[in-house]
Length: 190
Image (cartoon, rainbow, N blue to C red; front, side, top):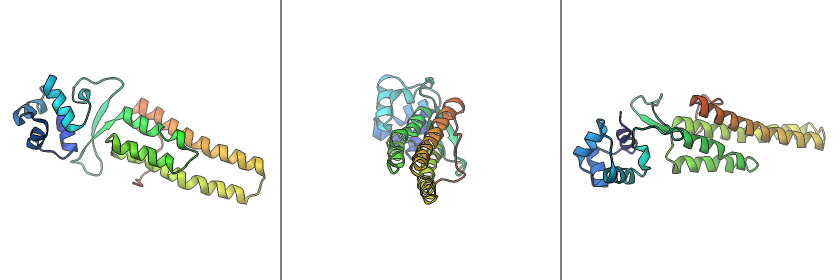
């Protein structure tokens, strides 16, 4: 399947609708979807109409900007585009906000929506952060109830924060190497 068709279908557009939106003939869109590479004005118009960068429509894969087309396990007819560079950015965006728990979920969620990466892998990343945000205060409160002193409380806080940093970095390494998550849940929270 061509990248143009995948992007078009992801946005629920027919060839005719994309033609009207971009000013490019439906016949030209058909040719591109069957293998012809768009160039010049056509490339710019289609990228602008789909609100993506021009190089995302080209068939040449850039090492830093790999996009993979996969079929979603839940809905076999739905095609999902995963931009692994964006996925890593969404994952790593949690790190600066680990000490402010709601933001370690909100920032990646906003990035997911603005980068148009609403896929099962990105949802898994955010679900892991949601679960950590729920579990971390519970572990901290249990540590306080043990009344083992201020040093223990400080060490516990540091360990809780470091555990999330480790989860985020381990997932980033796994995304980079194997294009999948190392820590994931069997369900999505979003």
